[in-house]
Length: 315
Image (cartoon, rainbow, N blue to C red; front, side, top):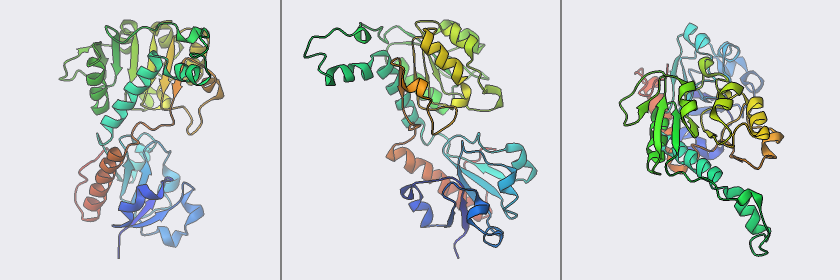
């Protein structure tokens, strides 16, 4: 009999196919597990698969008396109540670095689309503005990336790849993180100092209580009227109402966002602004990234059911 895995989050069927070949999946479809399955069906479930950002805590753990591991699909595990998990001696696994290249690519895509005003340019051409020689204030010559000061907040696997890509565009790169790393970029002691220095802020920090709304109104003011930011981390890192206000009143020049405070919802106020580029949390959504994340999940679950240490243990 195949080992049971409770699929806590809502996944596309194609994303679960490789897991279904190896394990017995109990899919909740994103609904509370107690509404979908009976206590008898859940009593011997030892492993749970989830998206790391989805809130998961004591209420669900109480339904699963045999639970021993929570395996997150993706790098993050900020949705997991780590205190409650520790009290149950649950082992947390994730997929570190599996999607790092894909996320870094999207970060640069957002930055280039923002700075070169790709969205307004596309709309201008499609509407016949170019053919009709109509003036467009949104297409005044923008500043290029060459020579720009790029600040990377968070220098984990994703941050390092973002920094390398940014440096290839002939920029000056510096970073801030909780500690100094062996990377060929200047380390800045504080986030506020990094923001004072940079023209472009790329956010790649891990989400958690210490980073909740850390990019607030005062930080945005420090970034300045010519500054832009790109966030591919978590929406919780930015005070979203403060960001909207800063974009509306010209406190900063623009933003590229793949993540939002409450997903899957992006505020209408953001959607209406011409100085933003928005994507629906697709940073790690490439075929090769999914294969990499699935490999990590399979390795973690296989090791757990074999009584071995998780090869990709998060906490």
